[in-house]
Image (tube, rainbow, N blue to C red; front, top):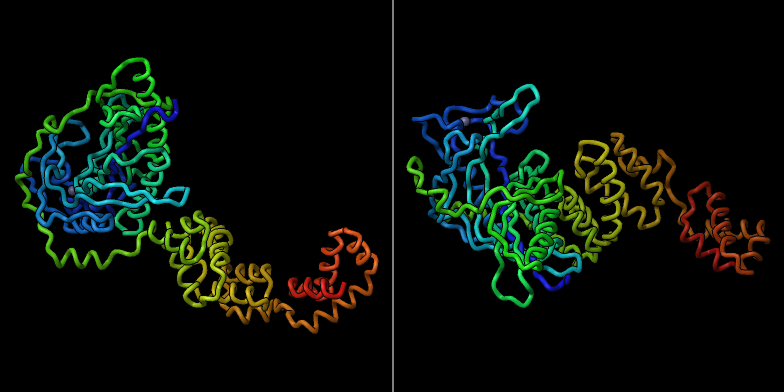
Length: 479
Ligand SMILES: [Zn+2]
């Protein structure tokens, strides 16, 4: 039964862009302000007002388009999408219908088995967001907050190339990391900056044509999107198994009930009566603009991940965790550049454990916690045996506590220099062995613990400063 049906998923992601002002007026584009405090006659759709397109919105959308290998339509147009809903006072949304800004791109997602899969991007277009309906116990009706009206959005539409829950998850995460890397959206799901429409269909594996799809509108968490896909897959299979047919419809994901619910039969494009927006000119993007934006696009996180795995031998999970966060990635790469003999796995461990713990405790990012220069010094000294790992952590604590002394000064002041002089340590080892004949015999009789005890005694004799690996070698030589 499990493999009898294929799952086919396409995702439409709406991302709010983090421009300073809204898409068609000069109202501030900021989340969390007092209800109805950032709106004007333009974004509340008063008669007689005229929209003016914010150029930044076009640039941000083109940036996402170029990063996802889209073709940029140098001339595109804006259209009215007519529908009536109280959160949209104009009774139409300005969007892009037949000629979007970007189309025909792709994105490579990295799967858990280390393989990549290419997901087609059908199009990316710009549009305006609608207001927000609010419910309150104090009032029977519905209240409207217009602050979100006119907040710029891009809609990223994928091809129905997603074939599993794992691929859907990887695709959503990759899109989110792109938005953040390009610095065009804060991508905060909890503030509704990313929402998605999930299209799901199933078909018997042997069948060529795709099945009828159902669309779940406005799912506002990734986990909700994943659960909706899992639920829909099973629901549609159950219908087909019992001889029924799937109706094309719009459904919604109900988080509380953990199921999808039909809300209406699917509207077709003609239901929206699209027509060219008469108040706005065509959008023209010239070659220079495309070139300038394209020069501004960094290496994207999915490509970084693959490079970290191949060039630095990092485990996939570490590589992904570092690459997905631009500060972590910068700290990692800059630290390595300062000393290419550093063990990359050690840098990764420091970033993902000790430094990340500190990031979680404060509101600082990785680069604000420690500079690449200091991290390089700590790891280099540990690697060369000048200090122990625990001393490295002591120094790190001092840096976090804003101690402005240099690392070398801290090592001297805290008395952390490790004894790595072989002759000096050998003398101590011989002395310890002389005093612990019983332990030597125990060790020779197979009690491996006895060796640890001897190492401990030697380190104690050096007041904790003896280099453990040299001590161990010397012990093995003399027992
Ligand atoms: Zn406004």
